[in-house]
Length: 347
Image (tube, rainbow, N blue to C red; front, top):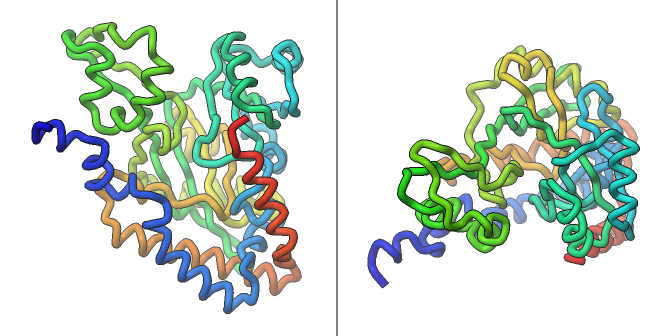
């Protein structure tokens, strides 16, 4: 193997950028901290009190549909829940009844990290999706808005105002043509895209031998998820008093919500500050301040932010508990986890 090929191998790409490291490696010191906080709270599920109206505070096992129902209508794209088992004709009828047209987004009602989130553009793709996922799922309006962000909000129950603590800008996975290389070559020459090759060679199988004109950008994946190749860009420079006030106003309209990340789209940064947004998902305490995954972000700094993140979960949960919010019992939490794991298995 040549040095160039070795340097561009998936192993080296992942080794030299901690954002690709296995989940458990980065999370291990936080696991120890969680155990310490659990001892202090006398509950391993203390985080369930962070957002009292969301199952386990949004750590895992919550219905995306139920959480979206907490959000005022004006902030949401059209979204409908489809119960399993589903047939194509029923899905098409549901889309028609709710004014949904291709393209749309299909996503499991229970899921995380981009699991089975797909952009569906045709009836044929409905068939393949239903074969792959025999679980409850959402059909969501595809938002053709140019800016996708993750905005993290934090409010302590004993305080009157909350604040934005993290912003991540989602840069979709693209390649740029040079007038000579095929799409396959462009993908394999770009480290972030190369890691997605097993999926991309299927998704774009009909176009792999096409040559893109010089300067033309080609979107490889329009789903803004890190596990699907999206670059997470640090957007901390967007945080100011105006942004915090806007999301404080929105968040106080969501019953029992104190801590989590809005995944949203908007037309411009000006619209963001004015609250002219569409919220695709609201993730509770299981979400992360995703700006830490900016390429080259120092690991030591990311860990410091994650420790603060868990400290905030603990403080918010304990303050809510003091106000009478009960922690989810271990027995109930175990049942929720079992249901969640079953729901995220293929098929």
